[in-house]
Image (cartoon, rainbow, N blue to C red):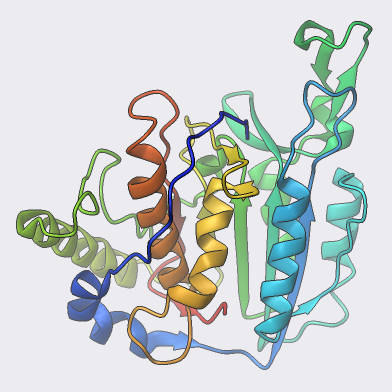
Length: 310
């Protein structure tokens, strides 16, 4: 994650009902609410030195905690000072082994730096960055690769939990590398402009066709053990935070979905609804400003399942 400055603009509610309604019979009937829901929430802000610090990832974590608590999740992690280590994350996940049951859901949210190591995406906790200053410049930073969290490491930790659903939400650079190969539900390519003015009929039809095809493929590859993953950016994209929102850009819109993202009006906001709302917000209010320079696109995978988040 990084921090460009963005001119302020008023945020209006994003209306996606036109696109969602024809799909609701396929999607809304399959969502679930498990009785036991546990969340581990991390905002990695205070990296060694100051050049690598992030300004709003701790706010991402605290705001996500508030939203999940309001929705009935039991939040188990506490990050008071923006310091997050690999050992802490893996220990927190392991601590749930004796508590979750086959009907439980576990959600892990991480906002912070992400990197690429050995051509794979990785989460970069605060202890993975080594600072050898002074002076406080980027040339004095290096990475302890043993302290990065790779997709395989995280999947192994989550697979050990005997729970029904495993949900991973990442607001990091290159986070799309954590999206699974099975059951991707991305609805359109990055340059797809359906939300530019809300009136493009051909764009709406393209979205429906793309989503329907992907949903059908996801049903065919259904595997209840596959984690549900939502990421801020693609595997080769940066994600950003913004003083305009006081959050990561993706996290801002994902959290806004808690109050505005009930696309089918049934009183619940599911993971797919929150993803689609956040993606629309990133495209309309961020990518339209940073065209080709700092644009990015959220990703999702996890078969045709859906689960209530808010």
